[in-house]
Amino acid sequence: MNKKNSKNMDRPELYGMVYEPTYSGATTFLRRTASRDLNGVDLVITGIPLDTATTNRPGARFGPRAVRLASTIMAWEKPYGLDFNPVDRLAMVDYGDCHFDFGKPEAAVNEMIDHISSIIDQGPGVLTIGGDHFVSYPVLKAYAKKYKEPISLIHFDAHTDTWEAGEGQDPEEENGRIDHGTMFYHAVKEGIVDPKNSVQIGIRTENPDTMGFNILDAPWVHKNGIEQVIQKTLEIVGNKPVYMTFDIDCLDPSFAPGTGTPVCGGLTSHQAMSIIRGLSGINLIGMDVVEVAPAYDVGEITALAAAHIAMEMVSIYASKPEFK
Image (cartoon, rainbow, N blue to C red; front, side):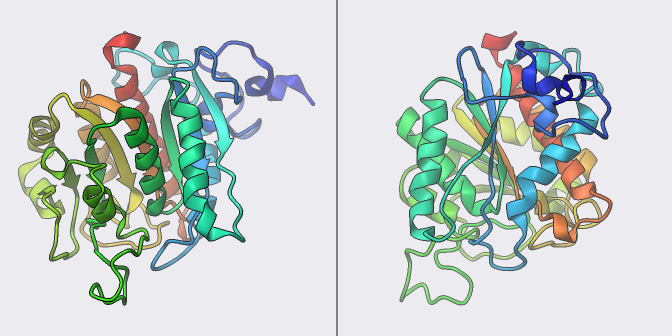
């Protein structure tokens, strides 16, 4: 192997930028070292390439690969406007993807829980790249096992994902169904997520039962602006442990066409990134970006938006007091 074009495969250090051509080399997230050795690691990036829980267009199983590839264009400089570089504060590794047997879907949930638990039980936080939005459910279950208290959720999405039963199902006949539109219903019912101290941003589809979540829907965001969203969100979550989840269909399809359930009228990339950056100081314990489906993308703009959003989340994580 030509080591000059594989710096993230052989370099011993976990901090700092990696300088190599954006069009070549190994495509780990932000050129981080590919490793499952978590000694001294602060944040782990891992993919969960599952899309069998989607209700519309599949293809998000290819999301982790696409987001990693898009992130290489960002790996040579710090995020614009920040007064620090997150990779100088955080020791990060790309842990690779969660393995599960696609022929045994009934076992996938426990395999995903075990995958995330095996990471966070060693200390690091996790940035998960999906996969459809269902993957947030086992990730949250793993976090709930560790924190043993209800978690606050900051949820960017076009949909509330609090449906009692899946599309086309009769709730009176089947209320245990879990897919990418029902997992936060179950997370609340199981006491994993505290809806009173959680907020959903960018919602623009109907759901008769919002499970008590605070909702700043897309029209409210457009009318009131970025600063009001930031202020309201900070008031809602306070200093509680927060998990942030970003369904890429929160963005308007003009900014993110490559997803399974696009809905017009969404946020712009600028709005989303600015809101996330404005939440610096929250007690962020973990995060994910989900629902990137490259087959429906145009010029990789969806994957690129997801990579930038993920980087903004990493920046918030790097702003925690222990990393300053």
